[in-house]
Image (cartoon, rainbow, N blue to C red; front, side, top):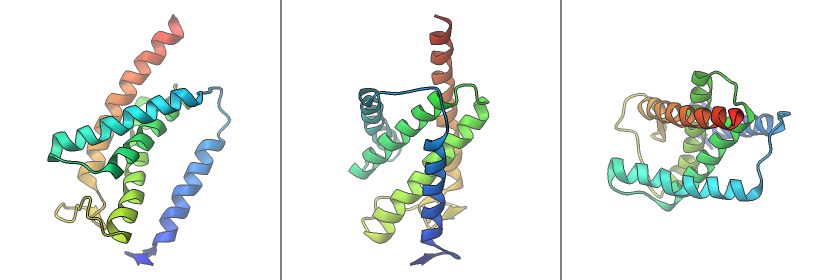
Length: 158
């Protein structure tokens, strides 16, 4: 199956390669399963609430995607707390956009559930991701990492 100029398997190979690199990084932090479950649960509530606030409705797949996104951001913050703020926000936004493209490809293009469609926006890709929402994710990740960084600094001092 091919979308655009490159086969879809190229994008998934890239996604899984990045994920493998991310989880194989030698870090000095550890999260227990309970923490991950709580973080995932918060994401499953927060992400759909953002959608409901923006467009008035959401879909259960967005709750799962939100849990994955929030957990990835939290893990990233713990793995690289000293990384420059703007870089964390950029990588966080790229993570969310990658997950959004992956989920959108499955639920919208393969299963034809029509959960969302960005074809009416300029600078979209396959109607699943758009530059506008990528910038919004960057802004939200900036807020997330600013708060998470403040908490990390307080914990480190106290």
